[in-house]
Image (cartoon, rainbow, N blue to C red; front, side, top):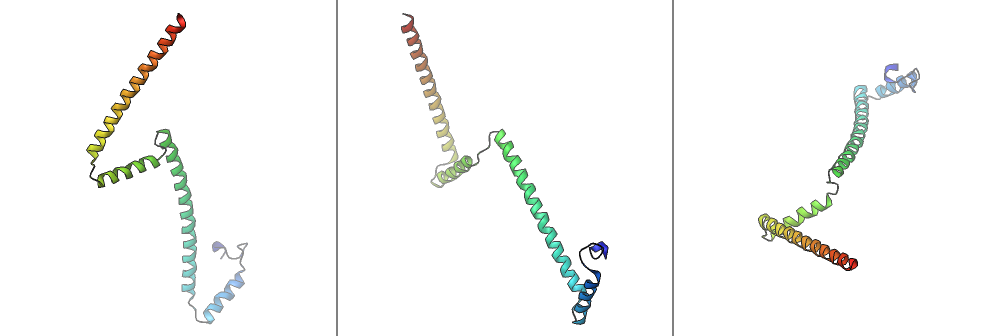
Length: 135
């Protein structure tokens, strides 16, 4: 009985447990069914604890993965999600990925040209200032 937590400091008095078992038997209850039900309850309790522990482990792993993704530059998934959603909407309106890619490349080239023009004008402006101050 001590092996299953009854008596010897297990918290339950063995004589009380025997009296409860006798009472169940007296009224026609199947002791094996009752013990099986208790075993199922214990298994469910253990399963809940396992699930709780697994959830904690998964949450910790998710946090580690999020940190690694941030280190790699993929920290915010909201922007890619919005981008995919916008792309799907555009394809519903008949604008294919090829067209989207060509527009994107055209915009990128235009931005690079504007960046070069702005950089050149900044260089020209700063050299003019240096010419003015050196006179």
